[in-house]
Length: 128
Image (cartoon, rainbow, N blue to C red; front, top):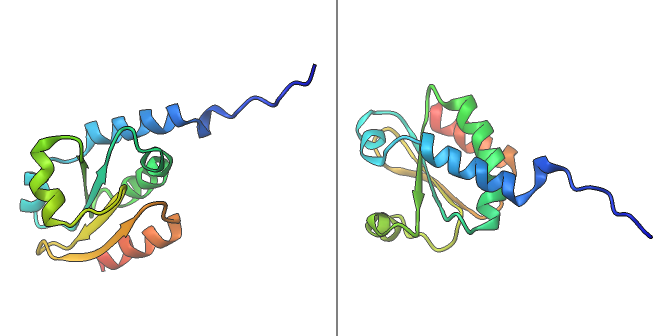
């Protein structure tokens, strides 16, 4: 009998989904973020999206690091209330990370699996 090594729980899809749901619950509401004169990261996601789940630890780390200077808004594309924002920000794939400055102008948009170093560079530009 051949035994396979146990999968690390920290890398499991379930852990990613739990992190994604927790982030969504803690995220700032869109209306408040747009009105508070701070730059904002809009994350367009879906619970079923495995890339969204996989990216959630990276986004959480960066959101925690920049939380005093940047809003995090999580918008589930499966929720019809966000249909107008999906159109406005031209969401073509998920996860989509749309970085907007304090004047609500789009600074950058990243789609899919993005290395943490690239995301950190955009966060740094956002808070300059």
